[in-house]
Image (tube, rainbow, N blue to C red; front, top):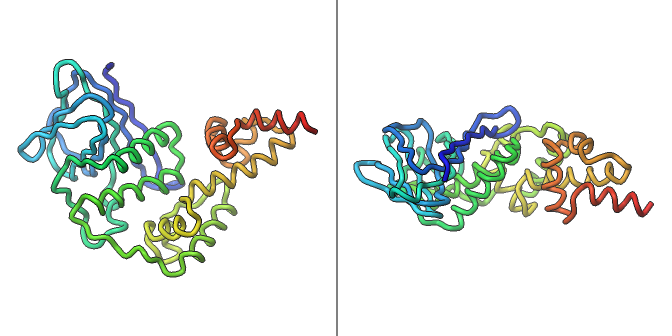
Length: 273
């Protein structure tokens, strides 16, 4: 395992606040004592790490989640002399964990969490956003997962999940995303316009549409891309015309929705003309 730390900065919505993602693979590196202003949320993906925290020791293993509260001093280093350790971490402003709860920011009595479902979701979101930090995707996925983390494992009490008028809210958001395809507005701004929290907007949209806003918009873009590809445009051109970051971003969603690459689709419909 090579010594490697890669940082990616995602934006929570177009022009929104940043959130840093760390992909770390270490064999020997040991952190000096330090603290963060944000919540440190990590998922171990290989080896074992030992963290000094609150006067004790935390030992991570693959699939475990670690949550370190803001301002808490900690260290980190390999759990043994041979295996090293690898993890994926994000550094979340406290406000991202308070949207779907009551009261002040959550406190995590237990920093080491066993929640395979949430660990897998956090790891998957981290991997995909590190590869392509799409602002709407980051704002749709990360606050939702962080709210789930707070509600399941902290001192927080959840807000009511019943959103009056959820259907109308979802259709309003859908139409705004479709109208502003190239630079979709931040969900936080849409929520404020509707007198909602971002969590309430996400809840209303997912309940009504069955998918989060970024997934709906990606599918809408794919449908637009089909028309352009059928007209003979190249995938690299089409990606920019429908709002994807690049051709790789278009390809990832095109295959997810239609099962083929944009190039294969273009060739097939062109051949049949």
